[in-house]
Image: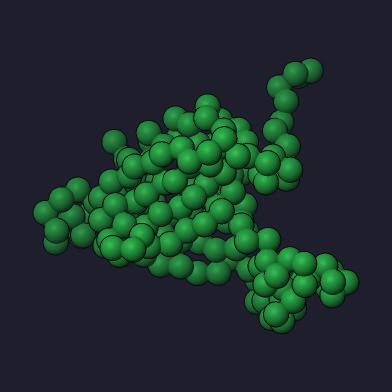
Length: 165
């Protein structure tokens, strides 16, 4: 069983916000703070991937959009507004929407190679947002709810209703 299977019990696989992410201070584990307005437990959660042996980050912002978004006005939301809302990617929102989202990489050759090297089970996952794609090889997963806050994501994600079908 892939560790992400348990995460999908309460977190939707897409349309959640990545509010913060990075290596925890000791440098072994990688943490995401996610916000969801849907699923079994809406709110903000810290999701920590443990024993991260490999991580890659690549932008999901298109090259031509990067060029338009190069200036400092794009890294501060108020500065972007004060600049007349120029066309480009606004980094200053300080969060990104998970789309197509998070997925478990089953039958991962990379994870198998790391498991053989380290002598412990390893897994691969990928999370993609409007801003980035991160792939990681890790051992386990843990999470904790940090608040009921869901206002940011609920202001941009409108759940589809099954009524009237």
